[in-house]
Length: 407
Image (cartoon, rainbow, N blue to C red; front, side, top):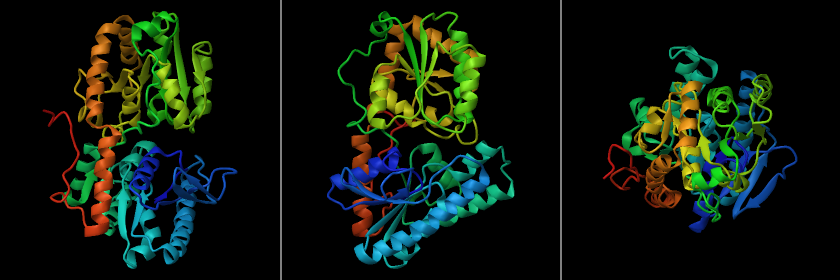
């Protein structure tokens, strides 16, 4: 696997790599190197090769430098390793899509190639930099996407909206499969404590939690505004925030401006093994993403992580989420609207029995997409690709359940 992120911090590559190891396969991961991390290591049976590139959130030029240097170094590394190990399969995780070129030598010498499209790059860059759909840079990204898909033997993506988008732009429908970002049950599982809302409330605080990247488009500012309004009617509300990103300084300043220092607690980044314990101590999880070309289609992994731990979720009403969750299975609010988000928080606080029913419906949907099922589909795809050379839809039955085909 080649991934432009840190390993094992990035959950999707980690889930997939460890799933293959469980099946008896030998898996190497080439990734970024953070700080003083060792150049090589082993994580749960996966051998990790860390390249001397560190990701920094400091503008377009830095992004370009990081992408190009990582592609070059990973191409050299995997070419050398291939001559020694003769990989059957190379699994590329985007972004960037063009990272597939690092696997050129193994591909030409017979290795199969998977392109794992975590996100559609054109939509991400349109949302991040407010670029128009017809901008020349976006057209270039769409061209690159089509090229990279054609270059690959199999394409994976995490939800139905993304799949439909890629197919609409030329990806053969039989070439792309959905592997959802479901949490690893070995990490995200309840430790046996009570999760009932009413029981939590008796302990004093009403704990709202956010974990994820601290960037403006993820709606963390909207969540702050909502908490500032909700505290007027929820006297013991607490907002616990976990993560890192380029919006942290503005986020901390806004806490002071809203006089929320006694309410909002920022904990920085903590690994997945510890975040599950923090989820268990929360009353609700909030996913405040602001609607955009990207977030309208995406399905935030955090929804499953909260439901896996038995927690109700507040989420925006977007296509990527509604594809899987009807309106009575999550606590929906209008994206970008702090007043509406505050209203939903208050409803959760005042009506724990009603919200418990919504949570239970959400948890039932999560059960249809839990990682054990996704993992089986993923490993079957890989085994079929290695042995038969293709993964057409007629060969592999898709593991896809949404509100449009439930029951």
